[in-house]
Amino acid sequence: MRRLTKGFYQHDALTVARQLLGCLFLHQTHDGLLGVRLVETEAYRGPQDPGSHGYRGVTARTEVMFGPPGRLYVYFSYGMHWCANIVCGPPGVCEAVLLRAGEPLIGVQGMTRRRGVTSARLLAAGPARLAQAIGIGKEHNGASLLRGGAFWCAEDDRTAGYRTGDIAETVRVGLGAGRGEDLPWRFVVRDNPFVSRRG
Image 1 (spheres, rainbow, N blue to C red):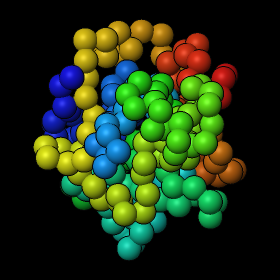
Image 2 (cartoon, helix red, strand yellow; image 1 turned 30 degrees about the horizontal axis):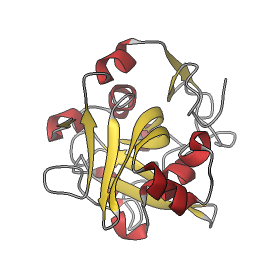
Image 3 (cartoon, rainbow, N blue to C red; image 1 turned 45 degrees about the vertical axis):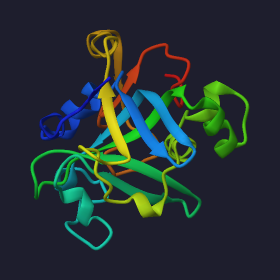
C-alpha cells in the first residue's frame, strides 16, 4: 500500500473525489488498524458552491476547509453524527471531498464493535456510518493525512481499476433547494454493494 502524498490532494475537489475511488482510507487506532476502500465520494467547492460549508467564506468552523490540503475536515451533522471530508486544492481555496461510503477491509471486527451492527454492507455505507466505523470524532478535525499521522489514504495494485472503471456521476445527496442540488458532483463505483444508496 502506497500512502498518497501531498501532491495528490493539491488538485480541485472534483478531480480528487473521483481519484479517491478505490483508494484505502485508514486509521491507526489504539485497538488496531481500521481501513475501508472508498466507493462513494462527493465534491464541495467553497464560494462557487452553495452546498459547501465554506460558501460564505472563512469562519471558525470552516477554517480547516481552506487548507492546507491533505487534512480532515470533521463536522457534526443533524446534531447526531460526525462526518469527514478530505481537504484538497491549494491553500486558501475551499475545496473538500466528503467521504460517503467505503467497503470494510481491515479491522472489520473493530468496526463492527464501533457500529453495533453485523452487516458488513452497512458498516460504512453513508458518511456518518463511515466516520463511526473508522473511529472519527470532533478531536480529529484538522488531522493530517500526510506522513506520520494516524489517518492516511493509500493506493494499491487494484486502485487504478476503480479510477478507470465504471464510475457513475450523480447529484449529491441531502441538499435542499438552491444549494447546488443539481450539480453532478457525487462519484460512485457503479453496482458496488457498499455504496450508501443506489441510483
